[in-house]
Length: 255
Image 1 (tube, rainbow, N blue to C red):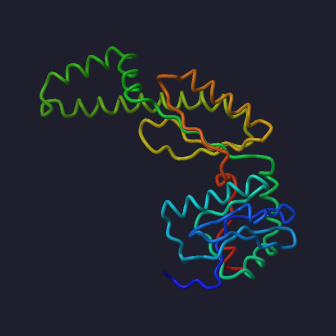
Image 2 (image 1 turned 120 degrees about the horizontal axis):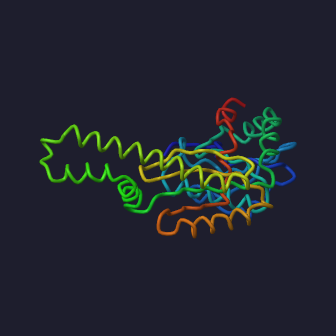
């Protein structure tokens, strides 16, 4: 492990008058106790850095997120991405003073709001069954190809695959639009994230006012009921609003 004497791992920032109690924050990466560096208008949630760079293993990433989630219970938190290390506490203070306008502006954009994540995925076999059920010609082509050797139908099988893929993309766009249309009115902002697998319909982050959080929960329950047996939803949050805050780790090094 690299000697990081004096280095500071930064989890995020709050307003100085909302600086959380370090005793409530508990431990961060490597079991090190959290503390707070308070500037004139902003405060930083930190621990001593145990390595530089910090090993991006699941245990460390989870410790980073859990500490931020505890901080969110008492303050509006601007989260830093995993792995942000400053050379010293003095550098953290200089960063907060130099970039105070940007930090306060970012904080204003998320105050009294939470990030909620929604992933929707077709259940096993559902979409391919639907595509075939809706097109007799496509079913006929599939059935004919199944009765012939693959070596004799190479190009037809490629075309069948391409046509199924076109239908899948169209279905994904239509069903994603239907789901998002029901959730977007309850959110202040929406971030479209990368879909991770072929059967995933959507992956979105929603920035939602705390006043609308219960209504958003209820809408998610309605969606689960509406698409029961067809679509599985993964609904997470509140989580640190990474997708709606963009803080630059270079600020720490350059301060």
